[in-house]
Length: 113
Length: 116
Image 1 (cartoon, rainbow over the protein chains, first blue to last red):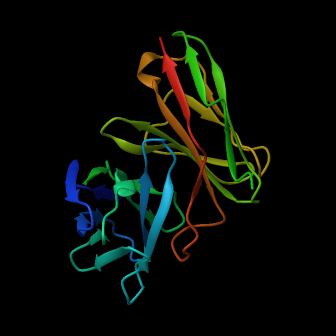
Image 2 (cartoon, rainbow over the protein chains, first blue to last red):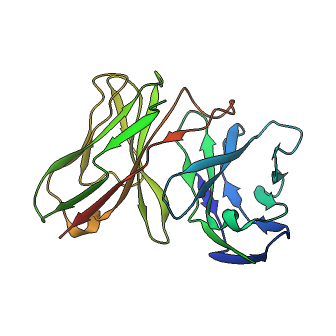
């Protein structure tokens, strides 16, 4: 069975600092995709970044980067230069071969001015 | 762009009532899914469909029915509502299996359902 673990229920970060949100996953399928989603207080799910299991380089999207360590089965999200608008819930998710996303329980990030 | 449209946005039901949560997408996506979100639990998969006429159960299917008669629509039915089904429900769609693509799932805005 596939499983996503996010061990940080809540995180605080100072504005303009970088923060790392942890995510580990478990799957026996060699082919999978890893995703991060942001959910602000308004409730919508916003796609941030994707990493394929065969991708050689870590994914980056603007201020977001994914620290992918395949041997450790970890896919941590790094947000650089945090902004007040980054305060939200963040979900790590995995899609094994041709199946819907499996989500972790999320991390609530609070950015402090 | 409509994307994934869920209706209603809010609903209050009494225990034992039935209702259907509607989900429609206009992107011609084959894959559609229903999730429920409860505090501290993340999103859990209820049912999903890989194409018209094909559905399968997810992690928490009990108490819910689905059907997929068209590519566009994927309604979720609560046959006899229970307080444990109080939750926020999300519908999502994607063009195909998300493994080898960077095409993410597109989510609707959610339906907040309360069962009294």
